[in-house]
Length: 127
Image (cartoon, rainbow, N blue to C red; front, side):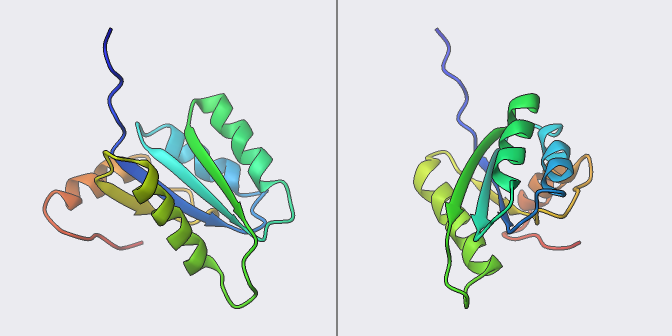
């Protein structure tokens, strides 16, 4: 019996009421490879979570959905931190933390390009 290779990359996506946009966002990520996607729903009142779960099932995306009710003075930054903390606590092989927004559609080589840059730098940022 062979052991599955532990995933070493997590993609954190904070979201609030992104039902209309989360599908294209996750579809772009699902086509790129072997990463865990952690979607942090921050005070969401629409169907963002169920749409995301449907996309994940359709494309075989490794998706964790965390639903949180945050105080009014906390928002996207707190949601992003919650997702990063979750990855750090639950992924023993974690080497890379990537993040994007729920209304973004990343390029088809976004994960690979970020990982290539992270082999030569401690942090990568950009549009």
